[in-house]
Image (cartoon, rainbow, N blue to C red; front, top):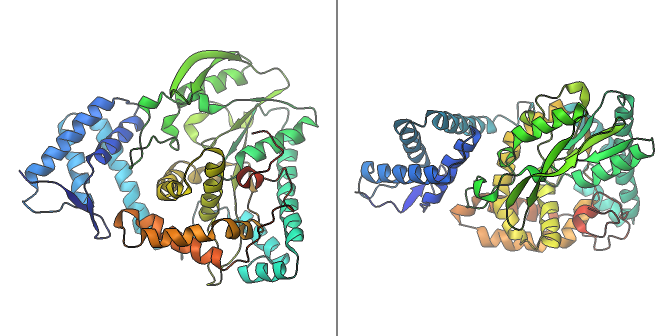
Length: 446
C-alpha cells in the first residue's frame, strides 16, 4: 500500500496532503443536495484515502485531478449518486472558469453591469480621479477634502435614486433586499435607505437572516477547516423562503434565534408580522440568491445590489480591482471589530472570492438597481494604513506554494498602495460615510 503524504497542484507545486480537505469537499457536495451528515462524509473521505493508497504506485505523488477522480468513483460506488452529481457539477464549473479565465480580457463578462460602469467611468474622468497619477496630483494640490466631498455626493445620489425607485413601487413592494459581496457596504447602505424612506412615511421591519444559520456542527467548512459562513447553504433557505411568503401575505411567523457564542439555533424564538404599511428590510450577502425568495412574486420584491465599482487605472494602465478594495475593507473591519488578524483575512480571501463568484456575482443582473459604494479617496487612506503590511506579506508568502493566492494579492496591493500618496488624517470623511463602516468612527449604530 502506497504512503500518501503529498499532492501535486495544478501549478505543478507539491504540497502536503491533507485528508480533511476531501471530507470538507464531500460534505459541501452533500449540503448542496440537502444532506448534513458529517459522519458519512468522514467515512467516505477515509474510503477515498484508502483507494488512493491502493491505486497509487509507490513514490507517486497524485495530482488534484487524480484525487477528484477517486472522490467521484467512491461516491458512485458507495451509492451516493446525488452527492456525486453535485460534486461533478462543482468540479466541471471550476474547470470551466479556469478555461475561460484567459478569455476574459477579450470577451465581455455577463456579470459586469456595463451601463453602470460607463456612468462611473465618465464621472471619474470628469472629476479627474480616473488614474492614480491624477488622484496623486489632486492630493498634492491640497484637494483631498474636496475629493471626499465629491465621492460622498455621488454615493448619496445613488441612494436618492434607489429610494425614489422604491417609493414609485410603494403600493406593491413588500420587501427590500440589499445584497452584495463581502464588505461592499450593505449595513451602512441599509441604514441610509431606511432613513430616507422613513421620512416619506414608510415603516420598515428588519429581518436578520443570520438567525437562519444552521447549527455550527452542520455547517460546511472551507478548505482550511474553518466553518464557512459565506455559502448560502449555511442558511436554512427553505425556512427563509417559507417565512417570506407568509410575511408578504400578512401572516405571522415565528423566527429562529442564532447564538453565535454557542453556534446553535433555537427555532420559534420570536414572533414577526408585517402591518399593512410595513416593508420588510433584508440586508444579506445572498439577498439575490434565487432559493432565498423563489416563491415570492418579483413585484413584491425590490432588489438592490452593492459593489465598490471604482473606475481608476494604476500606473501600469490596469484598473484597480474591486475585490482588492473589499479585501482591504474587510481586513480593517475584522481587525477593529472582530479581533481578527488581517493576515488571516488575506489567506482565506480566495475562498471568499470563489463563493462570491458562484453564489452572489452571477445574480447582480437580477437587481432592480445597483449602488456604487466605491470612493476614489479610500485608496490614499488605505495606503497609509496597509501598505507596509502588504510589503511584509509579499516577503512572507514568497515561494510558499500553499499560499500562492495570498502572495499574488499581496504583490499586487503592495505595488498599488505604494504608488498612492498616503493620507493619515481621515477627519474630512463624514461620520456617517459608508467608509466609516470599515475605518471606524461612524456615528451610525451597526
